[in-house]
Amino acid sequence: MPDKLVYLQHHKNKKRKGGKKSSPRQRSWLRRLPRWAWWLTALLVVGTYVFVFYFFFVGPSGFRWRAIYGEPDYPEGYDIHGIDISHHQGKIDWEKLRTAMINRGPVRFVMIKATEGGDYLDRRFNDNFYQARENGFIRGAYHFWSNKNGAREQAYFFLDKVHLEEGDLPPVLDVENKPKDVSDEDFQRDILTWLHIVEDRYHVKPIIYTYYKFKERYLGDERFDDYPFWIAHYYVKKLEYTGKWKFWQHTDVGRLPGIETNVDLNVYNGSYYDLRMLTIGSGENEEVEVNSPPLH
Image (tube, rainbow, N blue to C red):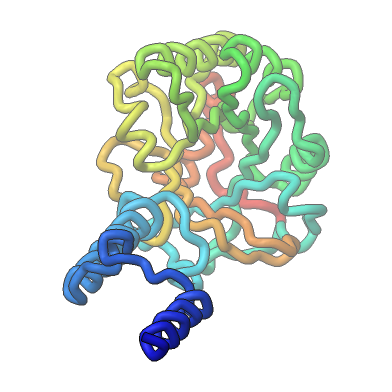
C-alpha cells in the first residue's frame, strides 16, 4: 500500500509540472490534416495570389506596375510623343525640357493636371500651363474626377480655374474610379453631364482619359463613342484596346532632362498635322503650321 501511495503522489506531481495534456478532440483540425493537404492548400493560396497579381497589375489588361519590367519600351509606329505632368514632377526646368527627346523624337505636347473634385487646384498648374505655351509645346489641361463631388460642381470648378485658348488641346476628363454605391447608368450619366457642360463652353468634344480595363467596363456605352479617348495601358508592345483612340499613355516611369522625377510618357495616334487639327479653333483656321516643332 505505501508503494502505491508513493506512485500516486509521484504521478500527481508530474501532472502538476507538465500541465494538463489536451485530448485529440481538443487539437485544432488543422493539425490533423495530412501533409499532402497542407501542400495542396499552400499551392492554392500561392496560385490564387499569382493569378490576381498578374491579372490586375502585370497582364495585358492591367493598369499600372512600375518596376517589374525595368526600363520602359517605346511603342513602335508612333512619331508624336508627349508627357503629362502635375505638382508631383516638382519645378520643371523648361529650358532643358524643350530640347528633350523621346525615342529620338521631340516632345510635342504636354498634358497638365489642373483641378480635382470640386475645390482642388494643382499648385503648379498655373506655372506649368504658362510655361508649356511659352516654350512652344501644344498644351492641354485635365480634371481628375472625384466621386466625392457632383458632376456639375466639378465641371464649373474646372471652367472657373482653366481658361483654354486657341491652339490648346480640348479639355480632358481623367476618370479612373466609380463609386460602389452608384449604378453604372447613374455613373455614366454623371460623366456625360461633366462632358456636356464643358463641351458647351468650348464647342469641342472633351478628351476622356482612363485605363484600358475601366474603359471596357464602364465607358463602353455608345454614348461615349464620339469622344476622343486617351488610354493608359502600360508595358505592352501593342495597345490591347481595339476601339478608336487618340492618345496612349504607355508608361509612368519615363525619364527626361529637366524633370527630376519619373514622368508619364504618351504617344499620339496620328501625325503632327492631325494633332494640330485636334486643337481648339483649328476647324476655323485653314492654315496650320505643320512643321513647327517645339523651339530648339
